[in-house]
Amino acid sequence: MTQFHYPDLQVCVLAAGKGKRMRSNLPKVLHKVLGRAMIDHVLHTVEALRPKSIAVVTGHASEKVREHVGQPVNLDWVIQDKQLGTGHAVQQCEKVIRDVRDVLIVCGDTPMLSAETLARLVDEHRASATDVTVLTAKPLNSFGYGRIVRDEKGNVTSIVEQKDATDDQRLIGEVSSGIYCVRHDVLFDLLHAIDNSNAQEEYYLPDIVPLALNAGQSVAAVAMDDSDEMVGVNDRVDLAHVEDLMQKRIIQDWQRRGVTIEKPDTVRIEASVSIGLDTTIQAGCYLIGATQIGDECKVGPNAVLVDARLDDRVNVYAFSHIHGAGVGSDTVVGPYARLRPGAALDEHVHIGNFVEIKQAVIGEGSKVNHLSYIGDSTIGSNCNIGAGTITCNYDGANKFETVIGDNVFVGSDTQLVAPVSVGDDATIGAGSTITRNVDAGGLTLSERTATQYFSDWKRPQKDKR
Ligand code: UD1
Ligand code: MG
Image (cartoon, rainbow, N blue to C red; front, side, top):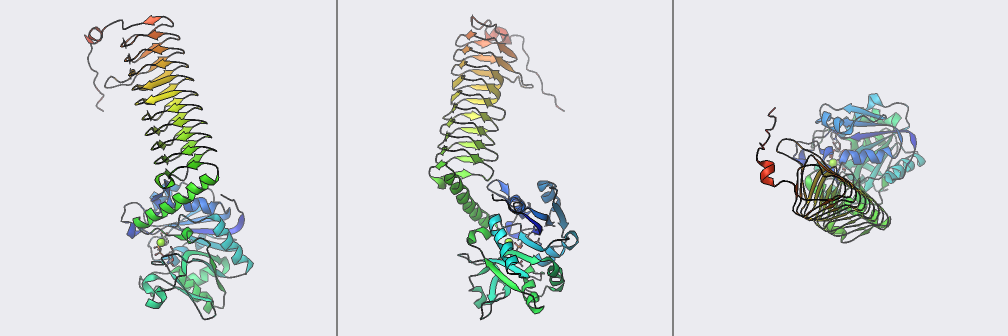
């Protein structure tokens, strides 16, 4: 995102509304769009302006919003106890704003906004020396938005909300984005003058427009290039719509940056994912959370990556699931593999079909190709772990570790009963149940049958506390 610098600009983010139309226990601005809360999208955007400071107005479930956002240095929290309207919300910021030229007001429920558009609004507002500038758009469907009313000369005279608009006014295609840039030295006098004599009995921010004109101040509109940027989320239908729009934007952005995305309509790529050059994402993939993918990888079709890290030239074949795991360069995973949190694969590793790896390090060049479970383990380099190998890491109460050295060959259908270790260069014969440590080198077969091993064994009890 382009970075700007407006050291004499105050940003106010309005996020106090309950969002009744969302029908949710969660405050509206914490609902996620492509994995990131709406408020985070908006804060991310306004931070790129590098303003003097940002005030966020919260009210409904304010503690949840604050807990979620934390405390960035240049951010003031402002409480609006009762949600009496957008004008009233901005009024609450009066105490925290000082020594700025303009105040930029944005809503917390318009996550598609770009910093470029906001910067253009501020620049045009300043270049024309206007007192009150509103950002407008002409969306395909203007329902629900405040309509921009102009006089016969084309000057903006007022903004009329959907519920207050006459039938004729509802036909107006030009709407308010809810975003304003206002000179600081006029803003609060205007806000003190608004009343709530309207259909919703709210103190409407848009009412500063006629008030400014009455006071002899200037009002202008700046039109958005792309009306998708101002789509507001008021219910979950809007949420899905905005997610679609943002998904298209993110996918096209990656495509332009050198990523091939097949069947883009079937793919989900969340906002915080990153993807390297010449990587191909095939149909039906879900790339979620903090997933990072290197260069020249191939993923899919239908792979799910959650907080996963792939280095360069990794191949993740169909229907694999990688969550909280790291994969080294030139490694192959799947099809139908599952890497769970704490799985760390080195370079040139092969993980094949129906293999589950959890909390385990797999060393360079090692192969676990078929039908295995490797958990709480460390496997050295250049090992071959045969089909159906299981690390038996859990005795019903506690987890134990398996440690395997370098160049080890584990025959098919072997159970390694942890805690257990296997020395370098060892070979374990097929069908072995390994219950004692295996020395380096040489061939080891099950020394004891399972009947012998378990003859005096009692299942440990879980600590009930
Ligand atoms: C608002 C605008 C409308 C504009 C539209 C763009 C008003 C009266 N209407 O309508 O002109 O076209 O946005 O999306 O301004 N909020 C508070 N405190 C309150 C009320 C609202 O902080 O007392 C916050 C909400 O959390 C939300 C934002 O202000 O983030 C906008 O409120 P919302 O109820 O969504 O207004 P809209 O009906 O969308
Ligand atoms: Mg809204």
